[in-house]
Length: 64
Image (cartoon, rainbow, N blue to C red):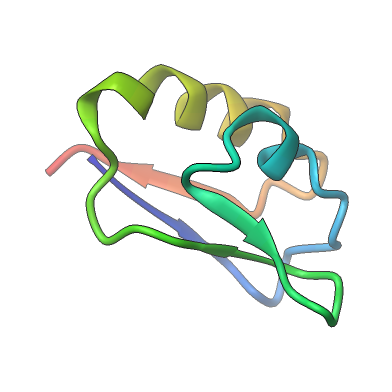
């Protein structure tokens, strides 16, 4: 699984970081980024939850 954040949509709510800090982080500018190129299997459910709960709908998951 891969995950990306659309920087044009991200509003810096930080919910993704609260749900899965192993995959997401907030930068000094207040916007989120992805820390991994591939999501480890044990974190896939948390990443899906972060995408579902993102108020800006800025997180996109692909099953590769």
